[in-house]
Image (cartoon, rainbow, N blue to C red; front, top):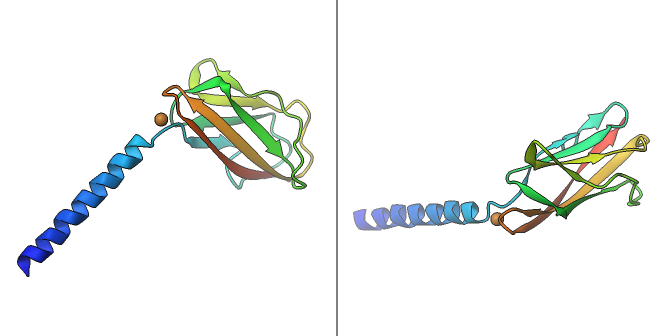
Amino acid sequence: MKKTALNRVVALLLASSALAFSQFALAHAHLKTPVPADKAVVEGSPQNLTLTFTEDVEPAFSGVEVLNAQNQPVAVEKAKLNDKQHDQLIVPISKPLPSGQYQVNWHVLSVDGHKTKGSYAFSVK
Ligand SMILES: [Cu+2]
């Protein structure tokens, strides 16, 4: 009885450390802080999107696409790396976004050679 309980605890510990390890191993460049934030409602068009990742990224193999509510791509400039912060992409928005909802699809290559991608959304009031 006691042994079974102990075995269970050991199994649980092993499972959780395996999980922690795999999460660490899979810790590539994930999106940490987008501005505007995910699900944010902003007053007026932002001038830039900034996407800060958990690792430095390679701008040549990273990109950001913005879709409007009709799923049409909107004109934004090419994502560039922040010179002073290599985990941050800046996407200048040259043509102000009309009010509506936008989806941001990003893909990055992190400096450790791994590709990741994801998306989030925000709205312009
Ligand atoms: Cu990685």
